[in-house]
Image 1: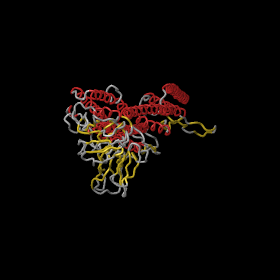
Image 2: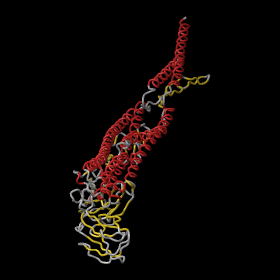
Image 3: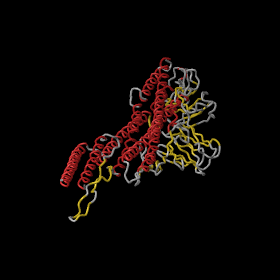
Image 4: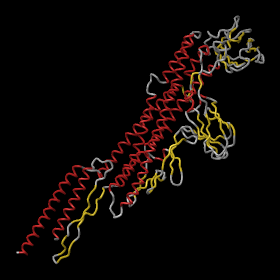
Length: 627
C-alpha cells in the first residue's frame, strides 16, 4: 500500500506540474501574466528497522515568479514613457502649425513690406493702398489663425487630460477592489496568483497615467502613493482625481486629488510621470510659451505701426488712426482671495513687453511679481509700478496677505489682433508739418531729418519761422514756441517745438530761413509712408527685430518638439530594457516550457508505471495468500 500511495502522490504531482506548465503556455501572451511554478517537497519518511523510507512527494503551492525590484523599475519606465509620448504627440502638432514657411508670419510680414515699398513710391495710388490694407489684414488673420489653432490644441490637450483622469480613477477603484479580493482569498496561506496578476496590471495602468510608488504588503495587497507621498490607494480605499479650472478661471486645467482628508491641487511635478503629467506640461509650458511669444510679436508689431500712423495724417488731412488693435492686458484676481483688491495692468512700452504672464502675490506688506517664463521675482514696493513694459496699479479695494493675481499680457495680445483701418484713405502716408528752406537762402542750410513727436500738440501745424543771424544762432517766431532769440545752432542737433523735431545740416548765411507749416498735399506726401515701411524692420520685440523674434519662436517650438521626440525615444528604450529584465524572471519562455512539459510527461508515465507495478505486486501477493 505504501508503494501505491507513493505512486499516487507522484502521479498527482506530475499532473499538477503538467497543468501548471500548460497554464504557462496558454498564457504566454496574456498581458500581466507571471510564470508559475508548482513547488513540491518530500511527503515525509517512515522509520523502519532498515532506516527511514520515503513516503513520496507532495505539492506545497503554486508559486508566482515575481521580483519586486524589477516590477518597480517597469512602473517607473511606464510612467516616464507615457509622459514623454503624450507630450511628444501634442508638441509635434504644435510644431506643424509653424512648419509651413509659405504661410508663416515671416512671409506675411515680407508681403506687407513689399506693398509698403510700393506705397512709398506712389502714395496717391488707390490700388497700391488697397494692396497694403489687404496685406495688413492677411498678417492679422495669420496671427489670429495661429492663436486660434493653439487655443484649439489647448482644448484638445485638456480633453485628453480629462479622459486620462477618468481612466486613472477607474484603475484606482479597481485596484482597491482587487485588494479586497486578495484579502478575502488569502485564508490558507496560498496566494491567488490571478488576483496578483490583476493587481500588477492595474498598477501598470496607474503608472501609465500618473507615476505611483507601489508598496506590496505581506498579504499581497498594494498601497500606491504619488511621488510626493499623497495616498492613491490604501487597502480597499481609493482616492479620486478631478479636473477643473485654475483659481484665475483662465481655462487652464487644474488637477486636484481628493483623499479621505483633503482635496489638494496637483501639478506635473507632483505626478512625477504618466500621460497626465505630459499633457499638463504641454499646456503649462509648451503651449504657454508659444502663445506668449506670438502675442509678444503681435503687440510689438501693432504698436510700431500704430505709433507711425499716429505721427502722420491720412488722405483727408486727419490724424492717422491705429492700423491694428488687440486685446489689452488683464489682471485677474484669484477666486480664493480674501481681500477686495483689484489690480489693473496697462502697456507702457510694447517694445519691452516680455513673452510671459506674471503672478502677483501680496505678502501683507508689498506685492511681489513672479515672471512665469523664468520664475524671476520683482518686489513692487508701491503701486503703480512698471515692469517689463507693463504698468501694474491698484484699481480698487484692499488686499489681504496671501491674495494672488494673474497678470495676463503677451498671452492675450494675439487673440484679439485685427486690422483696424477700413478705408484706403485712412493710411497716414503724409506728415502734418512740412519744413522748407527759404527760396533766397545764401548758405548751404538743408533739412536733415524731421519727425512729429507729439501728434496731439495744439500748435503742431502752426506756422513757425527760424531766422539765422549769421553769428551762429537763430530766432524763432511762431505761436507756441515762445519766440526765443539767438538760439545757438549746431548742425545735426535736434530743434524741437510744438510737437515736432527737426535737424539741419550745412552752414547758414545771415538772413537764411527755415519755415514750417501745414502740409498742403496729403496724398503725394510719402514721408510717413517711409516710416511705415521702416516700421517692419524697426519693430522691437523684446529688444529683437520681428524676423529675429519669429525665428526664435519657430526655433523654440522646433527645439521643444525635438527634445520631446528624443525623450520619448529614450524613455521607450529604457522601458523596453526594464520589461526585458522583468520578463527574464517572470515571463514565459515557450521553449523552456515545452522541455518541462516533456519532463513532467515522463514523470507522469513513470508514476503510472509505479502504480501499475504496485497493483501487480499486490495482486501476486493476494494470489499467493489465497493459493
